Image (tube, rainbow, N blue to C red; front, top):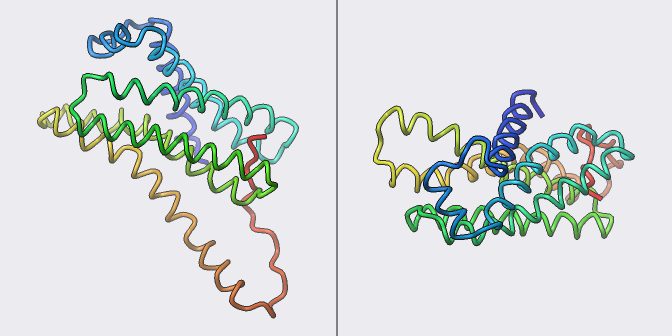
Length: 213
C-alpha cells in the first residue's frame, strides 16, 4: 500500500471524526441529515472515520500477527457499524435518487464483502479472506475518491446534481475495479496451475494474507 493512499485514507478518517464531534460544524445538507437521524449519522461518521484510520494500519501490520489481529478486529468492527449506519443515512440524505442508490450500493456491498471476509477467516480460508478484505477496503476507499472527484466537478462548474450522482457510483467502483485488475495475473496463474496437476507445488506468493481476526 503506497504512502499516498495511507495518508489520504487517514486524513479522510480524521475529517470524518472531526465532523462527528462537530469540529468543524457540519455543512447545511449534512446538518439536516443529522437532524433527521439523530445519533445515527454521527455514528456512521465516527465508526467510518475510525475504520479509515485502522484499515491501513491493519494492512501494514499484516506481517506481525500479534498486532495485526487486534487492529484488524477493531477495524472490522468499526467498518461493520459504519457501513450499517450508512444505509439509513443514504435513504434520508438530500441527494438526488441516483446518488442515493450509489451510496446504498456502496454501503451494502461493503457490508456484504466484510461479512464474507469474516466468514472466510473463521473457516481458515486465509487467501480468500485477504482478497475479500482488499475488496472491502477498496469499496470503503470510495469515501476518499468521492472528495477528490468533487474538487474538479466544482472547479469546472458542472451541473452539481448530475455530477454528484455520477461520482456517487464512480468513487467506489474505480478502486474496486483496480483491486480486481490487480488480482488478474494471480488468478490466471492459479488457473494454469489447477489445469496442470503434475506441476510441483509453487512457492508462496509474496503478498501475505490479511487476517482481521
